[in-house]
Image (spheres, one colour):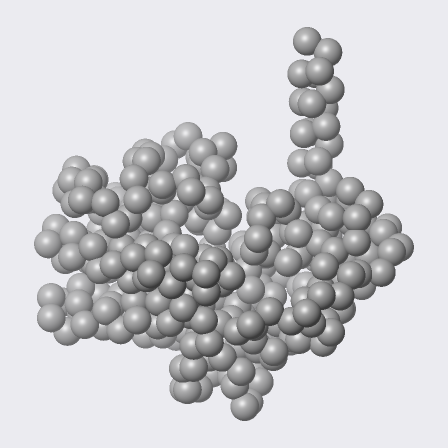
Amino acid sequence: MAESTKVLVTGGAGFIGSHLVNGLLDSGYSVAVVDDLSTGQLRNLNHQATFYHCPINDSRLVQIIQREGPEIVFHLAAQSSVRQSTLDPVGDADSNVLGTIRLLSAAAAEGVDKVVFSSTGGAIYGNPETVPCDEETRVNPLTPYAMSKYVSELYLDLFYQTYGLQYTILRYANVYGPGQDPNGEAGVIAIFAGMMLRGRSPNIYGDGKQERDFVYVSDVVEANLAAVYRGDGGVYNIGTGEPVTINRIHSLLQEYTEFHQEPVYRPRRAGEVLKIALDSSRAARELSWEPKVSLEEGLRHSVEYVRATSVRRSARARFGASS
């Protein structure tokens, strides 16, 4: 059935998006990608996908959807830095809210069947009283980024009520795995691993006792694939339900990288969630989805990727210096 299905992935050159593109291609879908490459990398993109270099809040998006005629749109493109959203809430809303509205307008006008939307479970609930929290937990955004994701969710429902554009919302925990940028601002696991492998002590903001739910990227891809045919009109947490402290992450990564120095503790950042984990039992019931990759296995894979990437970069640097 997938062989005749055309899909569009916004943000398909990013960390999660590029993994999703590979998963869709492996499943037989015809894939087009829209990405402005502000954080995504062209080298991440599978050459079998059709690529359009375009922001989602650009008027050209309408022509792209007209040309490609996708049945399903996976919407991952976003300004995803929590810190940047607090520095520039207007820019955050322009990308995440207005960009989503433009995408939904084009999708509804061109007869797209469904939008699968990547939202945030790690930030949208704030600091919930009960952990792990389910989808009935009160939404309590503490940052412009979290608010922009929630407003986008409301627009998805509005476009369904008004235009019949179907949707499924996936609220991710903290996603990690191979391909995450160890030099970026987001993605604590990749950042810690990258610094440790370079012999540098990572920064921990706060006392390190803050708890997160870490879900491996291949499990997130499986959730998106499950949402193609299931979960219409639903909101689903995608996480493990198992909170782990940042100190514990640091300790495990020390073991896997053979790094022996202690972290550097910095002041806690404003708006940071103190404790979160997601109850994904609704996804298990309605999407037939459950996480498969354990934290320990996922961390080992992540370290192996960062180590291999560092070796390749060092080799290229040496080659360049000698040429």
